[in-house]
Every structure is written in structure tokens, then in C-alpha cells.
Length: 427
Image (cartoon, rainbow, N blue to C red; front, side, top):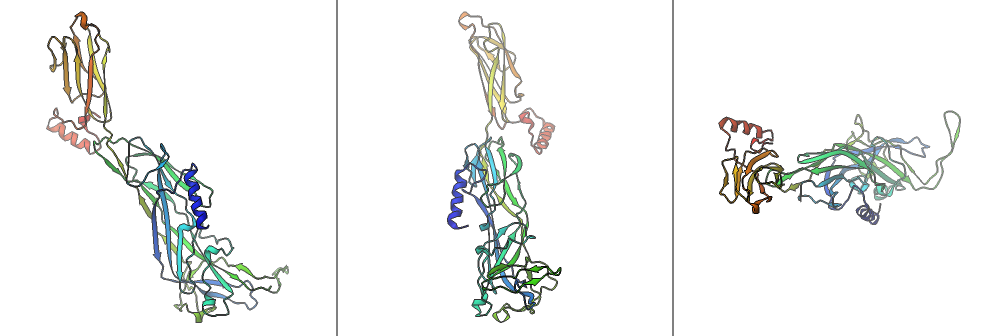
């Protein structure tokens, strides 16, 4: 994929409604140099002389793997940057952006050298034989002035797509991880939808959901393009069936992953084309291990202050009726009440006072959310005061003192707080 085409894809992904976006993506880049002389098993397509064996391929490759994630506010369809403030109830989508071939980059030195991209797939399956330009290495034969300069080497690095998860979801109410496919040449992506929980602490809290890419691995494969222009002789199979000759030019590979050399022979021009100096010995297929990578995403949730709604029953009382006040608190807190009746009254609580003109009742703390809190009997029967609306207000104390608790009760409340409960709030 050319650079121009890649940025065109980015533009399409931003405009089209899709569960992923590259804007303001956060990335993790793993990079490591492997100290190893890697060899490949040579098996010539035109093999009249029976030439076969292990030959130099790659030395000390440096591999980089990039992972990208993003967070979207699905209420606004806007991307949420890292270290942003969000509010309770916000719907967020945590997105694993698909992997693209440019996310695997490596540089090889020594016998063959270049900086091609990699591929995502099953490392145990050899790549499609096409001698792709993205895999082409420098022709060492030409550098060495060797007669073997008609072989153009191609090396593919195949990396397995890692398993994924999102952890540290405290403060969020989340669903499952779902897959999506943009059909643009990338791998399958994943996303998780979450809702920001209420923040009832009275102060800003920090969330740090973490994207996790599990440990994965990759393997190298070798191919070559023979630029000569001729055909080899026909052959006869073991069943006596004629087979067509191999004609050049062409791309060839034996689909055997690279291994590390066990002989210690140097990768130098003098050893170019040697099939007897090198051997993997007991070395297995050379594995590139990409360790687990994590991308934490920091979000701040402002305090979600509770509210109280106060009401009187009946809402329009008559003279010589009793009026009951109550309040419902949304969020965690204890209601503080002020009741006012514009007329004479006598209250059921000692802190309800009547002065012959109006009646005011106040009480702070100790109430059960939503239950009747005070009943005041209206005694005024003056015509001008008939059917007046009672005045009822309620505020919320988010940190009330436990004034009614004794030492033992306070101890129980301290223990309850360890489990996220506070008896002062009547939760």
C-alpha cells in the first residue's frame, strides 16, 4: 500500500460511520534487535546438479510492532483524547484499531539488508508466493560481485494477530468485546461499549481502563526471484508421468521458515552461495516473540453531586389538615429539610416552630431517603390563608456527620466503608 493510499484510507475511516477511528489514536510500539544469523533451506527450482542445503539469509534483524487504540464518545461521535474529562452517563466505545501491514516493520543487516514491512497472519502457514515488493531485500550477490547476482531475495515476516482484552474497568459499566471488519485490507478490529458510572465521592476521580494485547509471535520466510531467461529440462515423476520444465524468470520458495545457524560461520561474501558451511543443527524454527503490550487510557470523572426533590402531601392542604413532607435524593447523600407553612401550625417535631403567623420546620441528617420526614398539623383557618401552597425545600449533605452514632456504631460504620458502604448515608 502506498503512503498516499494509506492516508486516503485514514480519511475514509474518519468520514464513514464505523466503530473505529484513527484520529487521536494512542499507540504502543515494541521494538527489539535479535542477535542471530538466520539461514534458509536452498532448494533450486532448476536443480540439475542436485544443489540443496542451508545458506545465509538474514543477520541481526530489528523488529518493530505497533498497536493502535482509540476511544469514542458515541453520544457525540467524537473521539475522546487521553486524559480527558467525562461526565457520568457518557457512553464510550473502546476500540482496538485493526492491524495493517505497516504496523510490522523490520530492518535486516548483514548478508541481506533492507527495511521491509511485515504481514499479519498465521506464522505456521507460508505466505503466498508472489515476491512482493514490500518483502524485497538488497541483492547481496550484486554487492559482492558474485555470479549469483541474478537472484533477488525476498524475506517475509509473518506475525500472529494477538488476542485482546480491556482491563481496569472500575467506574465503568461495560458490555462484551465485539469484532468488526472494515474490509480495507486490515485485520479484524474489536470494540467494547461502556457507560461512565456516577461519581458520588464529591471529588474528581480517575479511571484508567487498559487495552491489553497478549503475547504473540512471528516467523521469517525466504523466497527468491530468478531473473534468468531460460527453461530447464522436462522431468519424469516417480509414477512415470511427464512434468513440464521449470521456466525462468520466476519467483520460488520452499515454504520453510528461517532457522538460526548453529555453525558460527560468518555471513561474508566469500560464503555466498555455499550450501555446506551452514546448518541449523538442532535449532528449531526461529521465533520472534512479541511480549504482552498494554495501553492505559486515563479519564477523569467530575463529581456527580446528588440532588433532592422535596414534596408535600397533600400538595394543597386545607385548614386543620396534616401535611407530610418527604424528599427523594438522587445519588448518595443525606437530605436537609426546610418546611414552611404560611400560617399557624403545630408541629410533630420539637424543631417545628409556629409563631402564629407561619410554621417552619428544619431538620438535618438521620433521615431515610424517600420516607415521610415530618408531619405538621395546620391550625390556621383564616380565610386569607385557606388553601395556601406549602413551601418545601430540600438540600443534600454529601458528607454528614454521624452525630447520632455511638462508639460501637461508629466502628461498624468504619467497617462498612471498607465494603463501599456508609451508614451515615442510609445506603
